[in-house]
Image (cartoon, rainbow, N blue to C red):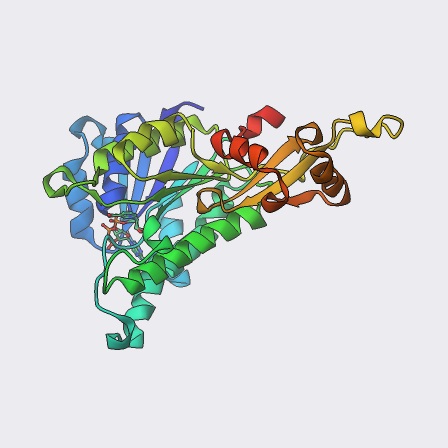
Length: 329
Ligand SMILES: NC(=O)c1ccc[n+]([C@@H]2O[C@H](COP(=O)([O-])OP(=O)(O)OC[C@H]3O[C@@H](n4cnc5c(N)ncnc54)[C@H](OP(=O)(O)O)[C@@H]3O)[C@@H](O)[C@H]2O)c1
């Protein structure tokens, strides 16, 4: 399927992060649909994309944060574009620094969770069924590293909201390990802005958009978290895939039979759940030949071997080189 035949739904596509992604997708020949609650933002987006690609952009006013709202706009969307092949979800807000928790009303926390988590969940529930069963389709979440630490005083609710989105993405990866659709997450550990609003260390939303559009185009990774901390990561992490953390599909893999006579020689494939490296959870399929005798014994008792039970040399090797899921296909 060429890019011209693909229709990407960009949730949050009128925002800072989303608009860079929308422009890059259109420049690569994709058709793109954007939903926003605010028509003036959609008009601004139309003026922002390359003029020659404007006819491939469909915009709809709608609220994907409520179940009724999302159903309504979904019907209008399908009527307008016919099908969706890919979804990029960059819902939320750019920044929040309302103050420490004791100064905040419950309403504020509700707004944060509604905007970062509820809209992400409600829209995923509505749109994922359109792409779920097709290996040529993709669903990509944009999340923020603010979910892993408090960035500065007064930003606590940003951390709570961003953490809920990170947790939701983790739940999807683990609850749907075998889903054919390419399910990925780009976790941005720094600020993102348009060129006229850049600050030191920020990513240009156009550069980020280019990298995300390339990821959507390639469709060669799934259940992967691409963590981006600086501009160079856009190339090494997303385009070359060096530091993505992957959940390798264990259930779909057949274990080779073990020859009882030569058990110690047998090449047994096991799954290791690694927690702690790069702060992410990673599952790998490994051959038991790579393990020390004691670790191999453990692996025979259970197909899930915690990283702390592995020797340091192997742990170091794992942290340097993550095998690609395709190595095991
Ligand atoms: N900007 C950064 O520095 C940065 C850094 C790291 C990670 N991120 C992540 O990137 C994501 C997007 O951030 P951003 O900077 O692009 O924020 P943004 O400029 O505020 O854009 C977010 C978009 O989400 C949309 N949205 C939210 N709730 C919606 C709903 N119920 N229905 C329809 N649309 C809804 C908004 O659409 P309307 O208001 O137009 O309806 C808005 O256009 C966030 O999850 C954030 O954590 C951002």
